Image 1 (cartoon, rainbow, N blue to C red):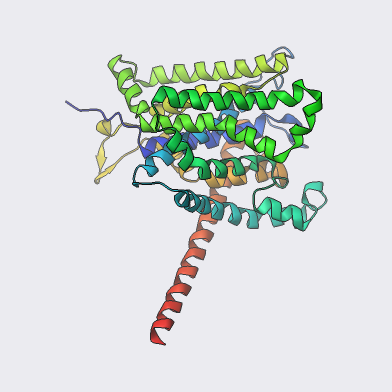
Image 2: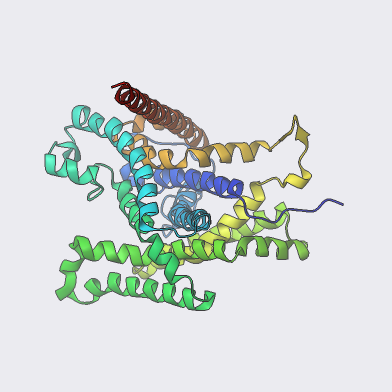
Length: 396
């Protein structure tokens, strides 16, 4: 009798990242019709709906749902960081800085490749008028005027640096940890509402430090849930429970994924009708469940796989999402340059929406592989130079 492995592995997290990056691309491609200029696409399924549902296409609804990718990334970041931190006796601020620098190298390589393109060939756009102060602010993530979708970069770095403190705070019992994180989350919503409720405090909406703190307090909730899910092995326990109830099957996961999508889109339009708040308020609840169900749906359990030349034969969807997950950081940083800033006509060339998504994925993957080659080649050159320097010092 085969025994099933219920562990939520690194393969699961890579699959989930791959799904998240696809959702991010769909979100940016179809959820902002006002930013798509002089191009159009053919919908796979037009929806003849009332005006309360703008966009009138399945792509717009999927694009609206796609914003959940932010919460997915933060949850998976917290999950992965907590696992890696347990491999060391004491995960310190120095370790966080090391991880931050590894990420910043990717960011700076992409910055050096893509930003000059705008400054040289798109200088007619206001955002790309060269100014040394603005350039340095963007380089060190203090501004995102060159690429609005890079707002997430500084938040990610700040949570990385705060991780040793967060881990210490999460040493309490799970209920206490959840209450603390939830309390900070509610404070962030209060901070967001205060300038709107009190006109005299409207200046806070443009205050850099105030907004930064508000964003950290808001998104730490999802990040902390990832840490707690890892600490208590919650995903493995949930999957094992689902299996005991005979629910650990693809049909169940598909139904639940569709339910989550409907709930998320429903909240989006409810907040739009109310005119206050946004659907990201519920992402800290929906994103972890969505991550688990998507990863379990795509992942082919090792116990049921055939062995081919001593390697596990993954199914095709698993291979695709694993590849996307591996390149997800680079794709996240480059895809908006293609969609919004430089190559919009090229991206929408295939016309049919599904082909546009596939074509953009190919463009981003090619870019990511080039970026990885540049980083690897530069690292090798520097290592060889240091090695020669050391050899020269020994000889002298």
